[in-house]
Amino acid sequence: MTKTKFLLFIIFYIIALFYLAINVPIGPHEATVYYTDTKILYYLTHMAEGWFGNGLDFRFPFVLLGVINIPIFFIMSRLYFSNKEESYFATTIFALLPGIITSAILVNIAVLVITFVLAFIIFYEKKKIIWQAISMISLLLVHDASVIFFIALAIFSAFKRDTMLFSMSIMLSAISLLYFNGLDIGGSPSGKFLELFGLYIALFSPLVFIYFFYALYKIWLRERKDILWYISFTAFTLSIFLSLRQRVNMTDFAPYVIVAVILMIVTYQQTLNVRLPQFQMWYKRGFFMVLFSLIISSMIILFHKQFFYLLEDKSKHFAYSFYEPYWQVLELHEIEQNCYTVGSQKGQYQLKYYGIEECNDSTVPKIHR
Image (cartoon, rainbow, N blue to C red; front, side, top):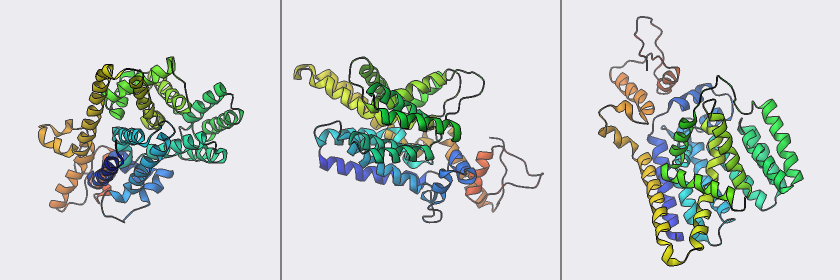
């Protein structure tokens, strides 16, 4: 990919992010965070309150971080590729991942975690020890499940015999578990393995996830394993083990898995380069299909609202929980009613954000959703 094409893509990409952030109504998780969270997400959602008069009032910091992550990923990709054209291509793949798009337009901690993980990898490869420590401590403070990251670093440093990194990782793992709640492991055993894979497929898009899984496996068997592989593979494996007994929170694991998508590009390039030109055709066609599926997934997110017109039952739409309360608000404003009661607390928070309070009159019927 040339620099000109890449810059045009980035311009279109940023416009698309802001378009989605402005036009998608507040979601149930976002509204709950907005009114009840007491940690960093609360401050981020209120940072731009009243600035724009639309969805950017609570999403602006997340969109900004999503945009910042693109050049940071590009800088990291330069550690893996010898020319900028390959880095442009890898960064484009990263930006198009459904998980990256949604993390940039919806309220969640993942986009900030990705920033610190990418920064740490860059500082590690450039041997900037002080900045490594700052990145690790920052991650500890912003992410309750950062113990996943520190366990991965501990395993990596043990194999590489990096005493300083190992000691730091073990210490921060202990602090995360003791003082920051660590990883949520509890509840009665119930297999959620298939549900987890469904979430990963949504995070990457179907064909990209299959190839990503293959890349991790191939590197495990044959290739040199670097710090990025250890972070991704440890998080991915741990999530699978936990899914055998409980529902897994994807925001705990996704940031550590998705940043290693560059390994997929590296594996593809290595596979292609060891073959003669006449035997590269099928590999190129296969990768084109993977890339095409990724573009389709991205377009579905961008033009998701139009799919409501194609569905007789709008509740089947994946974004229905975002739009249904907003449509109710519009109807209530038309009849000049300023209160409404639903059976879901999250739904009530969504209505509250648009100025519709819960009705106190017991005679007003409750709508259970």
